[in-house]
Image (cartoon, chains in turn cyan, orange):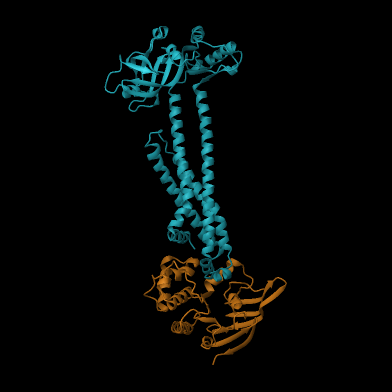
Length: 392
Length: 225
């Protein structure tokens, strides 16, 4: 008996009981669909974070002060003096104080990220203005309430007007808009365009926190990143007495941290996928066992007229694999649908379509069919023809 | 054709051993039309299972068409059933979801015969039993007599040396029963060997030779008058 014949038989049996076959497949459909959707979502978010880290440039070093076990507080001026003394390795340093704040202009309001920093930030992060000017040193010196706004903020709050020279309220305080940032990617506004940059001295007052816990540093060039990091580490250890109170990281380290998070995420996703497919597989085994009992007489007839154990086994196994295969294919379609219309539709992130994961989950669903179809098929093949023929 | 010698089938029921067949020896020749008769519990069903290679005897030998089958394994028995025996059952035993021709094709599918030849031979077999115009009907669309004729076509299609009919008229009204017996007679005339198992003496009387069985033993073996 050829495989083609067995496929035809299986197809006939599946289509002869459509509702049941569909319900049997449902576990696999949901499993595969959710895996594909989750992977597209995870890979999409990872990609956008990776892109933004990579966009920072490889010269970038980031300092985070946690201040653990210490009352000492390092100021921007101290770090700046240190940087000036090591200008062969460190070219620039800027403080970063950020938080989400409420913006208001006229009757419109929105929540955006507000970053307090100095004029160096413009060059370290390549955040140039398209019109007006960036924050300058005298803004910080005189604690002027000036703001440079991103395109998303400009478009929303000052629709159709030139924002430069207008006023804007940040957490109730009145600021003067002095510049508009260039759009990051051109075309669509991203989260980096939903920002307002103000002088760090003003931001410290606004957030009622005199401590600056983040600094962004530019090494002199890519080759001095390691030296610069080493010097910063020594200097900060000297101040805080231990390495627990701060971290100094560069772009490569941030990427590797991100990768380890992504890997963990993928393991978790894989685990969920595996569990849902096993549950789906158990459902299939259950239905196949019922089906074997129901079709005892059919099996008896087939055996009486010459079907070997092998033939019966293949017939039921192919039926199980076909159910999971069709389930897997439908799951992929549903996954694609979810990616397109749920993730894509609500603009949560730009999803990544991963053919590898689609093939993998389809392959696994076929495997589930083989594994969970094996026992019912074996049971069917072992039936005694005399007893099976007597079965009512 | 069929040569059974000293065949015993013993079922162990707790402490007791039940002899369903007790030292049965039997010869059936080619082109014979034999009826095996006996009341229920006489061992005729067991004998039929042995003859049909659905089961193997506890002791004794069974040679069918030159093959010693009493020592074969499951898969070899399936092959013998497929090629050497055509079954006709009391309850027709057709697959309800398949059409008449698909039912008839089944033994050929398990022989691995290609689609075209399968179709040709199945149509031929259905025409032989007078159902040439019903080949795409499912069993539910056919009368009992017609269903049994589909079963006969299925038994014939692989041209087996032995046709084994187990109470073929048991589920039919008298008229359909008579027609089925007529078909069996025609097959016999064409040269098939037929073994008919029944408890009905009137049906048995239509055979050439009648073998009576009781308590697992052959009690009478005579030519029909």
